[in-house]
Length: 223
Image (cartoon, rainbow, N blue to C red; front, top):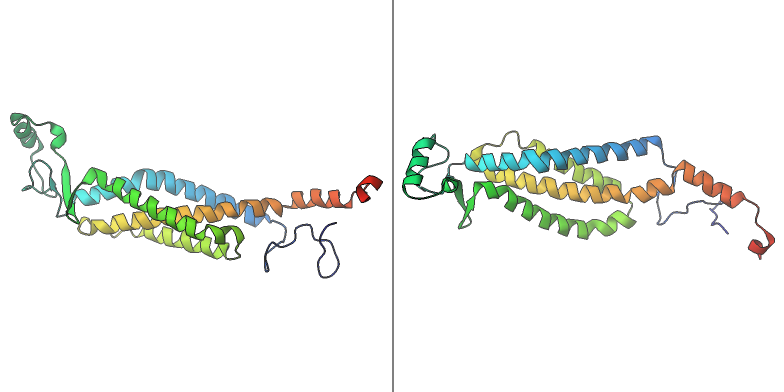
């Protein structure tokens, strides 16, 4: 027998927790789900996959602390004579691949080309911690929409804050990338938590369930 509400009518989808919105899924909700999915995929593919790593590397290379890996007395920020450097390296029997930029961070010498990789490694670690921490709220809470909007806004603001960054503040670019990636992962977990709800309360699903409940039962099913 289907559960009944306080007025005695049958509830097709009883609330899983107090205060759950069990109204039928609207076209506006479906549009919001699809549009956010499209926007998030564009961000992760174009932003995190291409533009942000290049930007982080370029900021680190242009910083005052970046020097040539082959000659720490020459800054990568200043204009250098590349043919002259190449000739010097070849005369010393070194490969041209040593003509890269490095900078010092927390006592470690980091290649500017690897800086983005280290940045995203840290962001993935923090992303995993955040997702594991808030996954329970995403599955069984009523604040998932507020959490989704919060992570989305923070990630969007962190991405827009790349505009005023200069090579002198290249570490901020790394920080914004970490915040953006963490917020993307958390918001996508929250977005996917809406999928079973949108399907469960979809008008077509409710209509089919209603027909099934209103269908006359056989004597064997009643017994």
